[in-house]
Image (cartoon, rainbow, N blue to C red; front, side, top):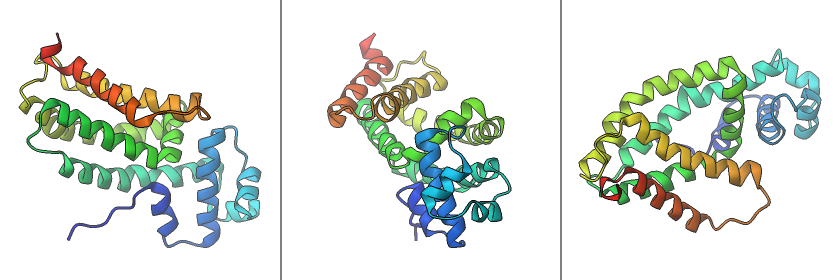
Length: 216
């Protein structure tokens, strides 16, 4: 039987067996790190937001960096691989280029949106934190062959993919569009109203145009 995977990192964290004070500290840090940044969040603010004392935080985490690692490491070591396997098994086969792009855009954006707190932390920490960057690089090295075998392989089977495009160029085209939209929606213009379905359709059209040999 296929193991059920939590819809989001927050759901997973809330379901873990751990002392209530530890969970409260992690959930509070997850919320504040994503909103204010790691450097802009104090342990006092985390404790106040969680309704616990700073002493409770330091009972479970020696430093704020340890608290950050406790949040990110399970995502890298366990959850992202599980989500990856679940995602790869759901890729439609066979599919036209447009159908494959539609699945990739909708599926991956929904995943990022459901995990927006940890995604925002990753985006900032990968740029500034060597330990976070190293953890993510390890995950990407493991994932790259799977991307080539599964996603890139299925896109090639459609018969419409531009033959001169290397796998890394295809990945950059898809992920770049999605990440740009995510940052625009969640960071740059969080209070703006978006027609998400229409926006994602436009992203799909742009990606198909960039990848399709019929669009050259």
